[in-house]
Amino acid sequence: MMVGERFTKEARVAVMAAVRDAEKVHAGEVGVEFLLLALLDAPVLAGFDLPREELEAAFRDYRRKGGLTKADAEALRGLGIDVDAVIDSVEQSLGAGVLRPGPRRRWFGMPLEPAFKKALENALRESRDLGHNYLGAEHVLLALLQGKGIVAEVLTERGVTYEEIRKRAASARAR
Amino acid sequence: MTEATDLATAAGDRDPKVGLRAVTALRRLLEHLEAAQVRSARAQGWSWQEIAAELGVSRQAVHKKHGGR
Image (cartoon, rainbow over all chains, first blue to last red; front, side):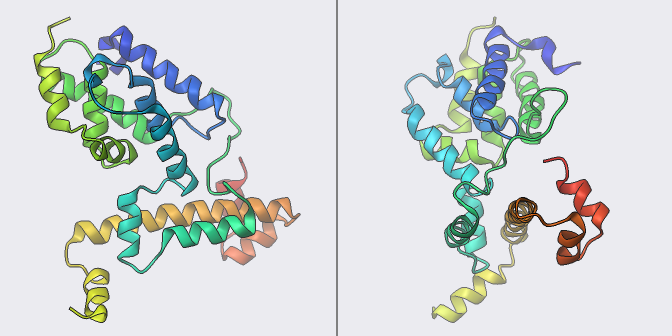
């Protein structure tokens, strides 16, 4: 089945908002972070402390570092590589923000980052696992939390866990 | 534990997950560094041929990878 068939309006609107916001900041592609930013007001995230500006700053830092998460930086430190030092030195010689991917020449609108597509596919699986016949914000969030990417890192740092969202998703009334 | 053995433990971590994550992160960093350096070279008027020679790859390869930016 096509991913789009089960989408709730909420999920569809979020995907479109993510694309629009990515275009607004001239990103090279639509990254998963835009998907989270578009879902911040979803009821399933109610009660969590997720200040938009703080998240946007974390995502900017992530893109500035060429898409490396804190866990990635930690892994590189294990190899003796100081990511901050590398980024600083490259920016010093080539200019600030030089590792942030810029807009690409494109013919069919802004491309979705592979992790974005993967998240939508996995959201469908999360919905099925819960026995739901719809795909909503909660399923997309579960998919994002399952990845080991930037969104999962930012969310778990702020107390949003896969287990908690799954509990909330499971108790949601059928739509 | 001394600093030396600390470093040795981290670098030679036996957990494949740790090692593979480091490799993946390094590859991502490398790709971004390469793209930035190629853009800079192009901006300074370098030909694809010159960039390719410096990177040790064919002109076609470097153009295919970075030409669309």
